[in-house]
Each structure stands twice: as C-alpha cells, then as structure tokens.
Image (cartoon, rainbow, N blue to C red; front, side):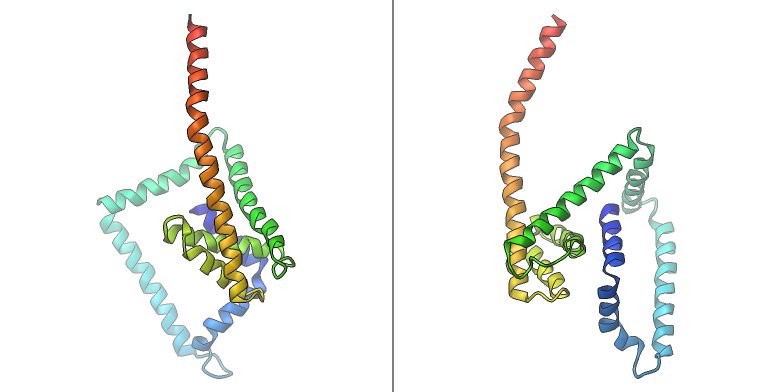
Length: 205
C-alpha cells in the first residue's frame, strides 16, 4: 500500500501538467464561480477538511483498543518493521525493481498497438499506479482494470476504444503469466523440495 501511494505521488510529479489540468477541470468550477476565486466555497472546504481530521483523531483514540484499532496498529507495525530489517536496502531495491518491471511491461506493451506506440514511460507509470486500484476493487482486476486503463489513456489523447483494448491486452498478459508460472510452481516445487529433503537426509547420515 505504501509503495502504491509512493508510485502515485511519483506519477503526479512526472505528469504534473496533466494533474494540474485535471484539478482545474474537476475542482476549478467549485473554487471559481467566475474569474475571481469563490472564497466562501474555499473556506467551507477548508472547514470540512479540518473537521474530518479532528473527527479522525477523536475516533482513532476511541477505537484503538477495539479489533479495528488493533488491526490498524498491526498494519502500522508491519510498515515500520521494514526499517528494522537486516537487509533493508535489498528489500527496498527489490520492491523498486518489481514496480519497475510492472511499468516496463506496460511501456513495452505500447508497441502492440500503433495508437499507443508513441506514449512515454510516465504514462506507463500512471497506468500501473491507477490500474493497481482496479486490481484491488475486483478479484484480479477483471473488468475494472481495462476501464481504469482506458480512463488514464484518455488523458494522453488515446480514444476510449483503443484504451480498453490496450487494457484487456495488459490484463490478459498478466493473468496468463500468473497462471502459467503458478502452474509451473505447483509442479516444480514438490520436486525441488523432495530433492532438498533427500540431500539433507544424506548429509545427516
């Protein structure tokens, strides 16, 4: 989850022009009723955000001894435990490499369609960042992943039809890869474990 948030922030930094356009498109009409800022709306939004933060702090103090509170505490301990790992640098490196491989999968996949062949690395990162939400919403991202990919690609001037086609290509490639490698693991792991156990028994003898 932390990695996903960091990837989203990196995407916003790399594509800040598009992020700014989106904010102006969807939030600008609430902040600007005319050429001048609507200070009443801005003030109300600030008050609402402040109230939500205060309510969250109050509720957190109330529920920290309940099951939900303990669950959040365990989640926090799991995140902070990364910094207590002996091979912390290697763990962070592998995490970064995993996200890089996911992004490269999309970036290389652009070449499958003429309409997406010109897209850059940052757009692939955006697809991975927001497409990951689709993977969370439904099992394996079925249905939602191509829709989210299409919505992201619209921002880069790709039509909805092409965007959904590309989304299904990416989703299918990931799913087939997981199924093939998962099946191979089921077959090979018992063989590897058997050889390993046999070698251990020989060494003990």
